[in-house]
Image (cartoon, rainbow, N blue to C red; front, side, top):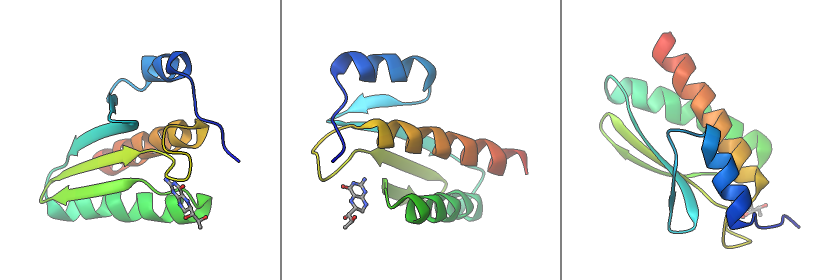
Length: 99
Ligand SMILES: C[C@H](O)[C@H](O)[C@H]1CNC2=NC(N)=NC(=O)C2=N1
């Protein structure tokens, strides 16, 4: 069973997750891409990672803007899995933007 991170742990993680904020018990990032196609590319790559890890972000897609929220639903808050997922999402966004 995953353990919830303490507020101190979360603050520390946000130190290098510079595009993420703490939002109602989740890590949140809003990503603006070039267009809908690029947004869906990011979402589908993240979906593949989430399936592999069996840990899924909440995703809101509005044309070229994608909002990711990472929290552990079973625990009702943020765990180490959410910090890892946020880092993975950052990697996908960077890769797609550079492609
Ligand atoms: C049954 C399955 O293991 C669970 O529903 C998994 C799937 N993905 C999940 N993702 C997230 N973010 N939190 C969960 O608690 C969670 N649980």
